[in-house]
Length: 115
Image (tube, one colour):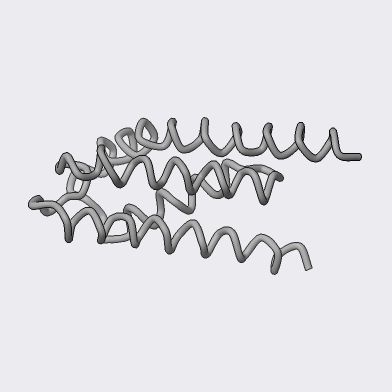
């Protein structure tokens, strides 16, 4: 049963990551989403908000939802510079990770007070 419960946020995170990438590519002018200013102005804040909400609702190990967000962003093939790409994804994932754990913290403190 736990696998089915974890499948919902994982799929949601993946789909939001992929949709965010496509939205930025559609609104922007560059092939790679993070090369465009639209990513930093719209795409990144949307993903940070998504990570926060996922961490708020599904509080157990919120780093998993960040991984799925990043997989959704990077699902367009293996880049030529794979090691550099992995480092870039790790650095780009830091704000999402902070947001997911902030959501977890807020969820735990809010629901702990209600008991």
